[in-house]
Length: 237
Image (cartoon, rainbow, N blue to C red; front, side, top):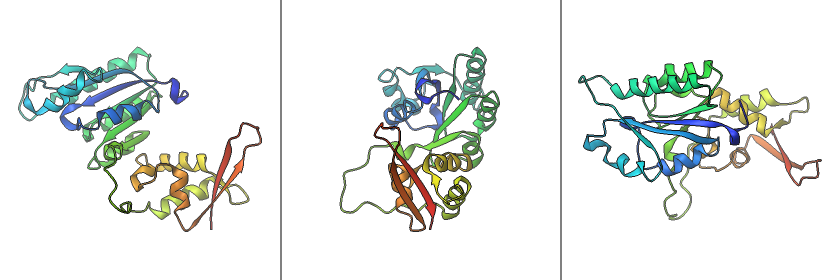
């Protein structure tokens, strides 16, 4: 996997199974991992159901791909997206794919792309079936991308992350002295649960999330390189 900022990504949107409202924030999220060299949205654009998506296409330079529903009950949109994805995969010009859908039908596609050595980022609603989530390198729930509503009193309490998941990640990354590099912990968390994201629990960064857990201890040390950076470590109490 190349450096994320240099990665060329294909953003393929299943407009039948994705909301248009967070598209601006979704593309901003994609920019954290690379450059959206290809942006396509698939659906039957002759239907009124995709009206909200139509309003976003030109604004974000997304190419609409027309796919008529030739047979009732058959999802032609899925087939068109999968065929395009395989064509793009074999060009060899991309470093990864962003699959935007909450449909489990894309599970084999995500697995196939990863087998080819490319990274897969999934974007979907929390109802997305677990097999599709697990087939991606990272899965982002789109509700955390939406702009926060105006504050009214204290911050809404979020469900805490599963303690076992965090404990196991810290334990796996721990050195002989018990301390684990936070970056390594984050990598292990993502491997164990592709949908893991500190924003799911109301925290912008992983360091803020771990600091809030009573069973974890965090330390921050200045980097010895003189760059002004810091090394953050965590351990079990």
